[in-house]
Length: 422
Length: 152
Image (cartoon, rainbow over all chains, first blue to last red; front, top):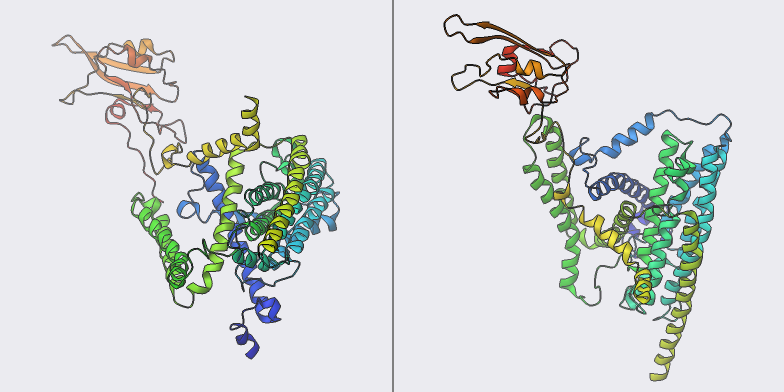
């Protein structure tokens, strides 16, 4: 009991502190949080894409279709769980489980704040990359076990795609890791260490060594879309050629596991990108606008933003058509507004707002990436397979190797200058 | 010119243009979807829907029972009954039958009418579960058919 409460005063992640209780709590919280965001993303993707295609998207289930993911999940659970007669039963069953496990494993090292990570590994980035690239194993298992042509083709494509883009991605990561060695002299692979290095160097790595950091970031941002099999690189599930790729034979709950894993993987790679290049949990301008007043002002932003969302809810509540068919929706929207307002108030409370702001800024940056994913999907047509390979091997790989070399050269030059002028 | 194209390729200008197009289309004014039962669409002035017979200001029918509409109808679905008034020696409309179930809403009857009494109006919810009720009587055409409003 003493240990449990004692953790709250330590400035360590639960994994480092060795507190099994808090690790469990954090794992459950992260799992619940990611699952909630996945559900929200399901709604948001349909909605944002619909607006980009001048449609409305889901409108009927809940206010502006907010409960649509719940209805979808219910439908998927009630659906018959089909398995092809000649499928490899064990592998077929195990494939979605593998994908989900690998997608969620990566979150062990994601730093939502200086202490808000399940654990801080000194090989954090490496672990994350390794685990997230394991998910291709699940995809290949699924495609092979389905014993059908389309899934096999889809999973083979997925394997080739993952292998090609992994290289460019890793090279871009290497450049960020090299940047983290600038102020201290020793680089780090720990996710928390990398964010701390950005704090020390007074710059997000996306903007350091301009424009080298930005190029590395761009390479990673493109490669991560390919890694998660999202449009415009969604060849493994290209519905115009391969029906649904490796998902063809999956239905019901197993399919929803794949779905969950896809979005969890998207969040995972986005959080790598946020951590490495966009300053992780750091609020905007932590050094430029430092001081007590600025700290207080920025820590009130989360609560205020929730209140603004609540205000929007109420505003649109007043503009809803006053007819009987919309009454349930209107009540739901007002209730949502109340909930958001209450959440905003809770986030403003003293003691809460200092601790919650790291998580808020991190989530905000990750959600920005999520929006980008949707935006890409609504804009870009799918690449042909040879184009995909060309981009991976002939464009991204040389650029990323060049970036690594440039980072090394500039870094060494700066270190030498610092030595000479001291 | 080649340099410009190369720069366009390097900085992915075309991709960013595409992104800006999709982003701008998110504006609510661009929306084309209608929430049908909740918000009812505005049909155009030339829309041809539920037929109706118009009365003049006194509530008397404008129809002179001339039969031009029945002649013009390609489906022969308009039935006109009339009597000759012995005093004024004019045709008086007694009944007017219009079978909407066979109507293709071509509007030829509307064009043929010399007094503009027959009109294909703007009501569009004509669906019924059976064919009964599709043969409209004179008073239905004059007073309109009350639309059944379903409450949830």
